[in-house]
Length: 363
Figure (cartoon, rainbow, N blue to C red):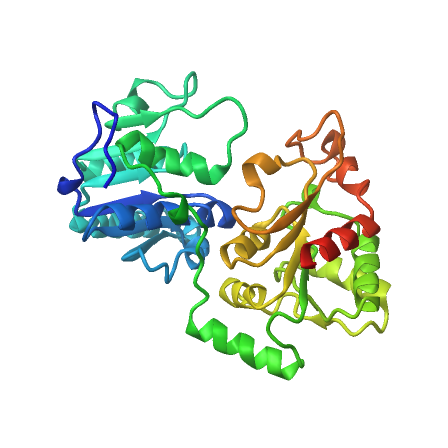
């Protein structure tokens, strides 16, 4: 345990049970994984729980530092107000029974502040939002922290919550962590045997994102697949089961013709995708959840970035190559140029640049 320089650092001997709240998307949740590792390393005997949306729970399940993953199902509201209220009340009772000493709230979601007020932990921390949150927000927490105006990686912003409490993360505890689990690993091994794939001897290409403005050209990915095949690489193609993403895969497959690519698009769960990425020699894709999974699985990755900021969302602590273009307007964070879903700074990247980045990374 390190010495704290804070006058209001918390007394870790009082912390027996912690709740970490992250009600956001898949990648955001995975980027909280070092928080659990650090807490487990620095508070002896602590129990650490997570509260996330139900669909994102696989990102943290099987994390060795997490005792329980509580989930909030966004589909509850579709069951009617009475059923939703019953589900919400049931979750609250479960959380109350856990008797948390510390709550770490990692978003601006008002639900986190309301939970702190209901659960009454000894300590609670959240980011401050000058101009956006009033006295009610500040008074909900014992500690709040500011982030710098200049870009800072999301992982470090999460860890800033711990620094504000007097818990200083060791460098070796800041890595992303995702555990596929035995079932996903067995399914992956079966599929690899079925398709003649060996560990470390194939490239995994994930050319889609749920956010279309982060997408590259179908023709570009087709060219990349052709050139990598000509260089002797075995190729695996993946995507989410979303119809829009599957349509992108169909267009790419029609472009490459009879090229021997193992197409697993839409066939893998998040855990199975993690296992497949973990056995690949390289991941190739966009600023997306699978890119963060690659970092968590310590798989080298080539990532294409356009409107989003790589300093905030880039591959974390993994061998990688970033492909960007020096446009004066990027990173803009907009939904494509003119909100048109397509980003010129991404479209300017060439297939040759992607292939060169893969070759350099593998060498």
